[in-house]
Image 1 (spheres, one colour):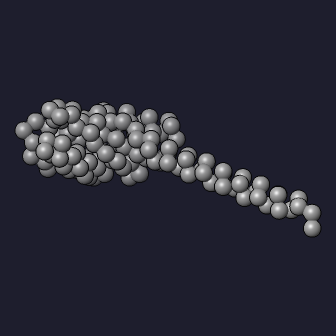
Image 2 (cartoon, one colour):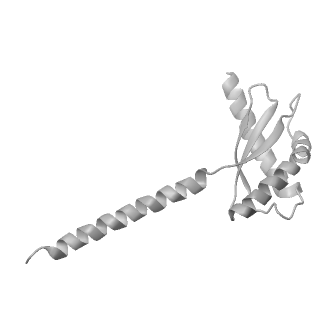
Image 3 (cartoon, one colour):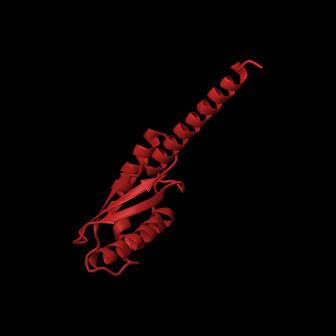
Length: 129
């Protein structure tokens, strides 16, 4: 039962933190292309890892991550106004590489399929008629 509660809190925090980042964080490095993919809250609700995904270079991602870490206190205060918890968790931000990994895997699978089709086509053309 406690796991269900944590899952509900994680889901709620993901929505609220995402809303705060989009509407209230005024940092030029934090763009509209930043999305909160998931939140992992500790069982005692004292800490929450906020995973973000975004489009951009590694340098841009580092700048956004640093900007969000700097604004973590502000984000927590604004989010706590929308969520009733006895103690709001301390936020830390992490990059979520799942989307990038998915695209890399998709590209590899596509390359494999192209190679397979190319070999099949080459074998068909090399057979004597």
